[in-house]
Length: 114
Length: 360
Image 1 (tube, one colour):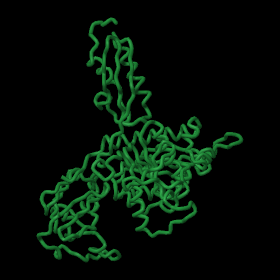
Image 2 (cartoon, chains in turn cyan, brown; image 1 turned 45 degrees about the vertical axis):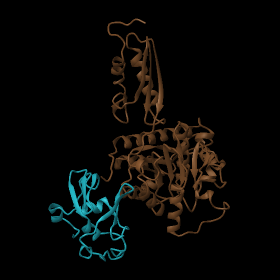
Image 3 (tube, chains in turn orange, green; image 1 turned 90 degrees about the vertical axis):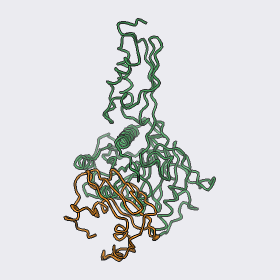
Image 4 (cartoon, chains in turn cyan, green; image 1 turned 45 degrees about the horizontal axis):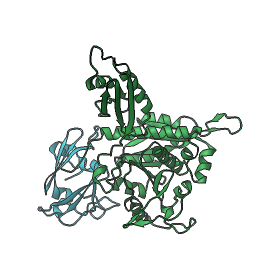
């Protein structure tokens, strides 16, 4: 789990392609996300049951060629994506994004499945 | 005009000015680029010191030190220092919908009745009095109090599809209270309406160029807070607390909320810190003593100052002019002005150290 100072504060956010996003965190860690995977982890109320937390949309439901249409900052604490399927209601806090880091090291101790 | 061993030069003057430090930014004023328009004419030296806020708490100290050091250089006959200021924009703000607003500062509290609006209006008026361009937005959709405190209740005008903010006490301000037809008309709205109304008060107002936009939040943690945190990259938030409320951990909740949305906490202000008896002048800490100061130091947050429970603050607010404007020399005005300077200093520190984040 990310708990070091700056672990949930991004130093750099880079859209590498329409399907790939990189975040370099202030603790030096680097996360590279695949768009379609992130879409399947969308935290909004249509994609995840508000009461039970049960996922209604899973990565397997997302077509592999899904792309970012737009990426925006939400205040200072989150990113909001607009996807090529038109969905855009998910607010991904930096805390969530750090937890979703797909690198092997983070997956080994992760609490969130990808 | 005796030019002794070393002739008087820009370098010689700048070398002396490098000894003057900005205590907040912890660098010297030459490195910080504050020294401008340096001119030497015979023995007459002139320069500007351009600070990051006109409300700088150590403005006079820096000017005096600069003057003294340059005067001591052999060959210098007169020194004339012109103090100027240019408020820096919070790095994230410049790209957003409020691009002409350099800093958005939220004033929040854990619960109602701690004097948050009174503090907000006085801080805003004090910043404006220092020479800054200041806006004030009433975030309390359901119980707006700023129109009364600023003595303006008439509906604002419109121009080019934007609302023209009302002006009072040197501030441009906007409040839901200006939009309802009669002062006693209640707003009975569900959350989404309040969210929309607040966004309009923020984005559909022709604020013009502002150094600081102070947002007076409703008490607690809720719709408006979240809307604000999601809509603009705030420079930071100030928490107003009574000594008692800190003991009850109520304002800590508000603080945690700001932390969760990564809004920097600029500091805590303790209101109603003590009561000065109108008859004998004795100071009574009726809600307890030093609570907010202790809490701030435990949490590593700047403590911006304490404001007394002073009848004059309340009565001036009821009359529609903030005390810092109505009676600038009153003890409470002095305290409030000092707090506004501490706040401005914290904003400058944040902006100086803030990383610029963009989606590349």
